[in-house]
Image 1 (cartoon, one colour):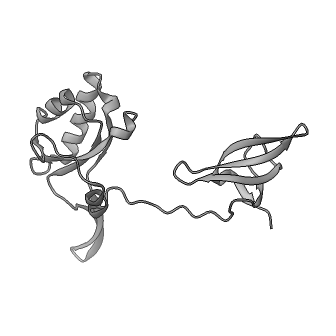
Image 2 (cartoon, rainbow, N blue to C red):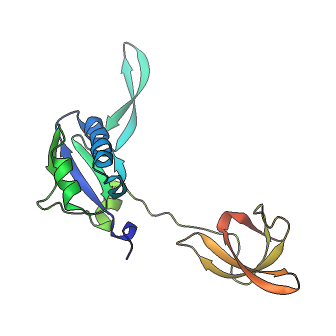
Image 3 (cartoon, rainbow, N blue to C red):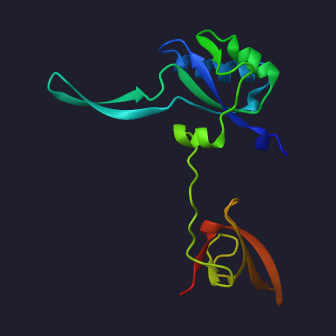
Length: 174
């Protein structure tokens, strides 16, 4: 399992209106301590709201979960300790910090899985639009929707060769 695979979402509690300051602080102190590779993503969940003030409409950004930051981190005790020491940070949810489950990340709207739909299937003949193989056609031999890649068999120099391409680099031939 790589470090990226061990990354989990954690919830960090802040003082009121300190979400952005704590987020910036996390980035700064993690870089200062050489732990920036352990901080993958920070989110302060917001939504756009239309408000009417003095008879005029204004779009404003409202926090969905005031006083909370969602952080995708690779677990590291030093990083956890440093984050808790940032001014305005009240600490992690849980002691020790408890990662969110996959269902919780979905319910909070942090990571919503996207379904990949491709207009071709195994055995279909496709046209490659990747700059290295533009105009070459081949047959789809394997699809990896998790990695968003396809393995296409193409004829090169009189031989069948398997080429791994991004899904968007191939189009079906009608």
